[in-house]
Image (tube, rainbow, N blue to C red; front, top):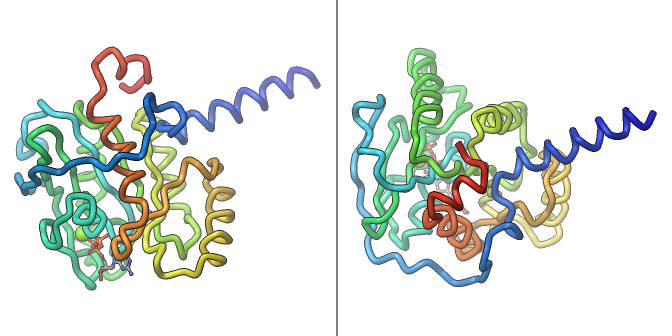
Length: 239
Ligand SMILES: Nc1nc2c(ncn2[C@@H]2O[C@H](COP(=O)(O)OP(=O)(O)OP(=O)(O)O)[C@@H](O)[C@H]2O)c(=O)[nH]1
Ligand SMILES: [Mg+2]
């Protein structure tokens, strides 16, 4: 019996660490100060590693279902309306797009997954393209997993998180389009989503590209990750 309790405790605590590679309270000097974006430029689009920019700067990737608002979120972060192309047609971003901010780090817009209407031939290429990027990118610090606050996470999100954990890639879970729900509905969804993802409330960032809610909080997390020293990286246990 005691053995079972110990095993369960180990599993629960371990699971928590893996899901939440980035816990806000573990970030040193946590304070709400917005990142000063001096420059933000498109660098290149890629489908395979030899097309990626050299991995000499830290990098944060943005992933999520088609049409969830990945490109809009990046535009909001960098205070630009049209740096990243957005669209009401799901599945618009089909390449891995690299943007450089302040000449200091990259933000990477990944193609969305899970949109049924995309032709099978195109879909087939997405998995290996994204997997190849995530597995092999030594400068990748974390993946921001963007989910629509109105939907409960599905098997795709759970699988994706498990997969990122397997490769020791920290996950930053973000619930976007928060402006589409009333405060009451928002709170209810947050409760359901924290339970479904088995994370604490303080590990989720609520976001809106429309109202800019969550922008400072997300920048805090990203800035901490892209400005870590190699020693801090090692301490955080990232690959
Ligand atoms: N109300 C509201 N609409 C949003 C928000 N974020 C994105 N949208 C809208 O959602 C649609 C899709 O946004 P995109 O940013 O292009 O989504 P994406 O995830 O990059 O889409 P793909 O590249 O096609 O996978 C657009 O019509 C956006 O205007 C948000 O926070 N609030
Ligand atoms: Mg997009």
